[in-house]
Length: 290
Ligand code: GTP
Ligand code: NA
Ligand code: MG
Image (cartoon, rainbow, N blue to C red; front, side, top):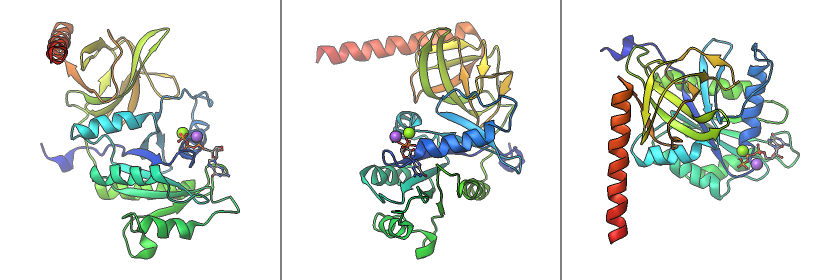
């Protein structure tokens, strides 16, 4: 099929950076300012992944730190869950060990970086120092002749956040990601948890449209989807490419980084899951015998 004829999908953006540099604060600001504008009235469930609509009507999907484990597993398997990395660097702290780690991950995965220089509201903020320090670690920002965009933001006051969304939007237009809403569902498990209601997973749909009643296999577990919930905890009937969703009804708790694929029947799903379980058990036995 002609790729250019497929509809665009939202870019998937992973927020990375050193501890306490403000990743969650920035995401909370983006989430709140968008959730406040919807009917869900601000009751957000933190699932570490959410989508926001822009003024243009386009959407951006964001993954927070809980996505990192999944990000790493998927990268190790040669798949990139993320299209863009937003590297958060606190303007008062500059480049720190986990900033350098994040740069290495993004570069290894060949994912473009947008730098959010955060905490710009602070008196001790030195954004120029951050830009120079980044250059010493292989991130050449536009101001120094490179091609990496930087945006000055404050997760606390919201200053610069619209510019960050704009930078992501522009980058995503260049990348031009598309997906087929009619294809068999393919996705990634970002998180697996066990709740009172049972075993659930946050799934990022990569291709196809996931609907209530669909059957998914992920690793050694499977589900016939009873309910789909968005990041606000609201039930949704279906979810398309580039969007995260909470999926319930899993036999076992899904594992972050596993691929979730649509099966044609419960029987087929159970068979695939069982074969994988047996294979894992055989591998474990062989290991134990060593
Ligand atoms: P980890 O997930 O633990 O790695 O941290 P994080 O990067 O998500 O940072 P978090 O959002 O938890 O923020 C760390 C601290 O910095 C909190 O006390 C925030 O209130 C504060 N903070 C975050 N952004 C800003 C900002 O723009 N300005 C100021 N002044 N403080 C901020
Ligand atoms: Na923190
Ligand atoms: Mg955080």
